Image 1: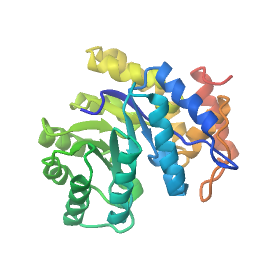
Image 2: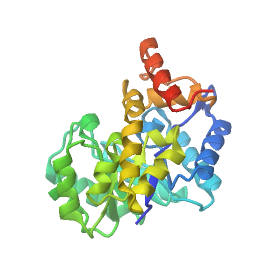
Image 3: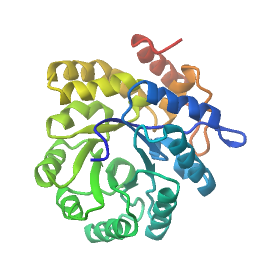
Length: 292
């Protein structure tokens, strides 16, 4: 087990020089103070596709140093060029990451056989536990439960972040992979449903702005207070919807800016939210007392 509870897919703040480490330090400390159970650096929400190799390595190293062993640091290394992913995994291990997160290869749209070969090559290259990230809405590739179950036989493939939003497929993951690998929600509006099928946590966008709430929701369920967890899930889902009214991480970085964090400008091709969507986001944040 890499972690149980709420892992934040942390945003990367930028400035004119690159990564804004002053703000990044504030964000990391927020999560240490508010009960976040793992830090996922350079995942999709951290915008690694717009970062240089030097920036990604620096961000992972900085997170490892700031966390200082208090919670696991999971480094995003996914890509659609297997050779590059293997190099990214080696760099993440050298930077001190505790585990790695790797998305299914996008754009190439490989076959099931290609998926197996890609992830087995990664698992044979690194000593770190691997979380496979299944998010077909972004990659145009779906990893079915049987394929993941076969991969989970490898000692280094530890978990899946499941974001297909297909509850039947999630149930298949839980049924086939029980005892072989852990299951994390990749969708903030499906945390409790996934936990009900045997999941042990979430890798969350919501946790960027509501870290204690997200942690408490997961732990309420895991500790047996299903009604509390259900009510927390239902209460927060309108905000989750607002956080995804434009492509992630545009809304959540905007939300952090509204909360007083200097997140910097978006790097193209990402750009500022449409004004009407900013107002929608503000409305939902205000209902939950998140605006200053």
